[in-house]
Image: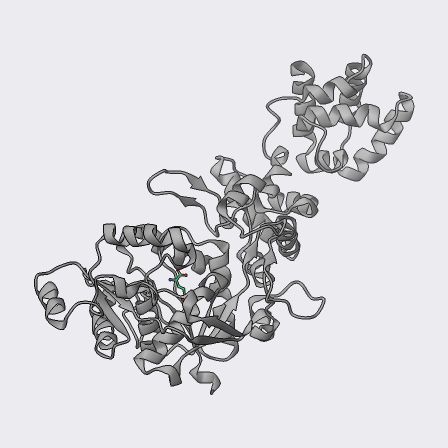
Length: 508
Ligand code: GLU
């Protein structure tokens, strides 16, 4: 196959927010397309009208935009094989469903909900595995295999509700050649006569997916492992449509597992363990329940991409940090594992830390500035840069910039009583007052001069560094945290430092 012919797609159903597993699927498709100079398509699979969530499509696009995962053809920009929203392609599918019926690969079924339920109940008693519509049961049901041609036509003419079901072969081994898993063989008695088309004119996922992959000339279907059970049905559909020769190749990506490896990573794990499972924050349209997102939690998109790339793929070397271009260069389906990939929240933070470390002080200041401005505070950009240079090693997520530096921008509003209990001694106020007086005389206020002055001062008062520095920190920062006290005082400046100490002495 010529590289330039490669066409892959990401085909989400807009039923809710995109899980990180979905973003990973999109990323791998994107990397594969870019690597081989192919095309990457976004197709919105919105045929199941009952499950659509109005804001989900926009959310999917915004998420992928944030990640820098760009499409060549999509519902927004269009393309030669559009439309790219299945709801706008509704008219296309019926023709193919009827073709299957005509060729006896599918049939009309008129069973009511009650009749289906009765069948399930009946079969559950004998063998639950066969409690489905398929080779073993379809001849007991109400469909065009059991009714006469005239009866079928009459029912259709009367507008009786129907579905079109695929006729699964009775005794056949179906082979799915998967680029990651190799040959997957499934016996047809494990499959059921899935509904392909409904009387309301809507196709189901299986039919629409196959028809569109064919019409959009998709060469590789790269998707999550949860779709592997559908793959034999899809293989049959390609065959029954007469498209077997152009059937895309399949690659089913390993599952994303919980941090402990026990089962699929779910939204609940994220809530329980305190990490997002969605790229962007999501507000449930009905419940208004807010789920956190990587963007809002303070991840950089380049770090997020790197984290996802490693959930299932590895380069086979020690290198861990990859730009998008490096990923494109190194990516290959051969290096995707078969086994589920455990999500490690600490490692995710580590990646973000590495990417924040690559930023210059100015870039970090650019990330911190909006928080400062949003609080109605005004500071010189160079001041913010100096602060960032001092605290940069402590920053794992973007909000850590503020959490580690707020006291450079606002004075403490309270003083930790817990710390006070530990460090505040009867002689402390006297020592601090003496320091205030001495420090007031310092002409050139900077870290080094302060340090030199302190040494003289402390030996003059027969005191140790901690005896003065811990109380000073409590008065200036309100707690026992932050960088070196002389660093803080140096940046805050003489006036602000001494003012805070004075105010603190009165309020503590
Ligand atoms: N619409 C399916 C989904 O929501 C697409 C599966 C596929 O890629 O075939 O994931």
